[in-house]
Image 1 (cartoon, rainbow, N blue to C red):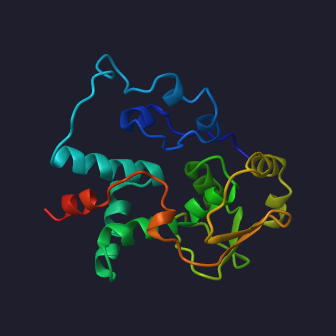
Image 2: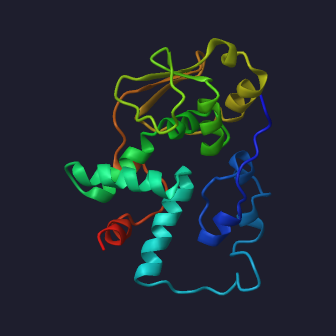
Length: 208
C-alpha cells in the first residue's frame, strides 16, 4: 500500500483547534499545534477578533477541513440537511458523522479521515460484505463495516488498528476488535460530534 501523506497541520494552527489532519502525529508532542499554538506567518501571534461574516466563514471552513470536503460537496450536504426535519445545523453535523470515511477513522482502521478516504477509494472497505468505494456513503443502523479479506491481513492496516487499540469508540458504533469489524447500532446525535463548532453560524452564512 502506498505511503500515506496527510495535509499540513498549519490548518490546525490557523483555526487554533486540533483537527487531527495528521493522524497519529496529532496525538504526540510533535504536533505543530503543541509546539507552536498560533497561526502561521509573521502575524500569526496576533489574535484577531472575528465578527459577522468572518465568524460564519471560519466555522464553515473548520467543518469542511475536519471532514475533508470540497465546497461543492459541503453545499450539497447542507442542502440535504435543509430538506430534513429538525434544526438544519444539527442535521448537517449528524450526516457528516455518518460518512463512511469518518466511521472508518473512528473505528481505528486509519490514522486520519484523509487516510480513511484513501482506504475506501482503493477498495479495502466492505459494508454488509459489499465493496463500497464512495467515502461520502452514509451508514445506516444495522450496517456492518469490515475490511476486505486480503486487507485484514495487510501488516500496515493491522499495525494502524493495533496503534488505535486504546482509542475510544463512539457509543453508536459497536466494535469487535478481535474480528476487526464494526456495526452501526444507532444513529449519532449532536453530542457525538466532538469538533468544537457553532453550527448556527454556518446556517446563517448559507441563508444570506
